[in-house]
Image 1 (cartoon, rainbow, N blue to C red):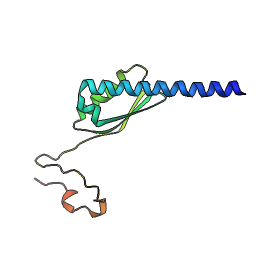
Image 2: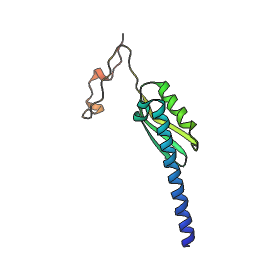
Image 3: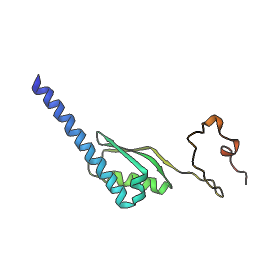
Image 4: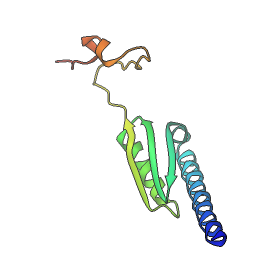
Amino acid sequence: MKLQSFQHYSHDLERGVHDTWITARVKSALALAKPSLGLQIHVKTQGGTVALSGRVNTHKQCEQAVGLARSVQGVVEVDARELLTHVFTPGSIPEPPSAEESPENRSSSSTRMDDK
């Protein structure tokens, strides 16, 4: 019984080390391609599946991040559902969200579209 337990623990440890290695390689690839990508994107790996999250400025940066993650050896799949792109209305100046502001308390000007 102890041998099986040790082998199971050893396998889990090996998988965890492998996932950590993949995460480091993906973060390095992002930072080398464009330093701001490495800072804007969070990377987590579980079982070879890389999850990207955070915010990027353009869809092109999102596609670039997914492509870079896929290019890393050992990556089985890339999940970019939590990787968001800033969306700006032409002619408007975006304001960062306030931590104190809840969706119910937002002014109507922050939720309606400009008719221009």
